[in-house]
Image (tube, rainbow, N blue to C red; front, side, top):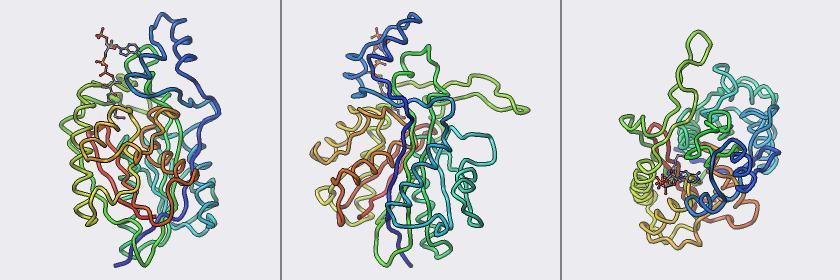
Length: 324
Ligand code: UT7
């Protein structure tokens, strides 16, 4: 059985950065009250990037994928598998993965979307890892890309201040040694209603409520519990102890969730990669975006063990331990 390694990372953000102050001022013009203080204290978010009309999940994904390929020293033609995680695809079909494949000039290998909301990237990573380890494919682009700004109710202050847009990508390839040391995914669909965008598509038109709805406190409690359990099972699978982790990159939804999980695992806060302050919650893009930031600023170095974890709508959760 072969292994897989992440050999390059990349990310992309929309052009427009919106600070909490700017967002609060914009919302105030419509009689919606919020503040930098509330958002900062309750979530750790200070700013987010919001897509302009000409930006979409595919445009962000393409830019992130190009950077990951460059970092890996690979050409688009070297890729024989594309797995793209998104809940905000450009179209119902074809998949955003196929749009990215065409834009990069890649042909032949499979390209498909994974829909696991904020766990989407780790679902995609686990899927690509398994497909490469069987020997079927050699080199994958795994991408998380979202434009959640398009499914937010901008009149609902309990959700619209939390999310941002962006994309992150990795090149994953077959290797003699790990690389990806463990992956484990979970879902419990009975929690669907605490975080959902319930609108459906009927005859090509959206029916019902097209916006994201969330019971914030229920999601918060569930998230902290499952992130801890998942981290412990991944450490067991990888044969590591928590103190052998160099970095942990949980889904970037709320700084308080990140801190609570680190505390439960006995991890010092300086092992947490935090980007929620700069990006907001970018759903499936949050983990690969944070990973790319920490690789490029030199925190993640060759030989480091990194815990990557997602949690979100579905309810879904899961993670991976990856050696760089
Ligand atoms: O990506 C998937 C994973 N998602 C998450 O992990 C999100 C998990 N949940 C959370 O991060 C937090 O629950 C929130 C950030 C969503 C909310 O924080 P909270 O500390 O649970 O606040 P709360 O919902 O208990 O609301 C406290 C107060 C309420 O007012 P009252 O009832 O106490 O008078 C809200 O109406 O804060 C009010 N509030 C706001 N005030 C100013 C809610 N949103 C805002 C706002 N600005 N934007």
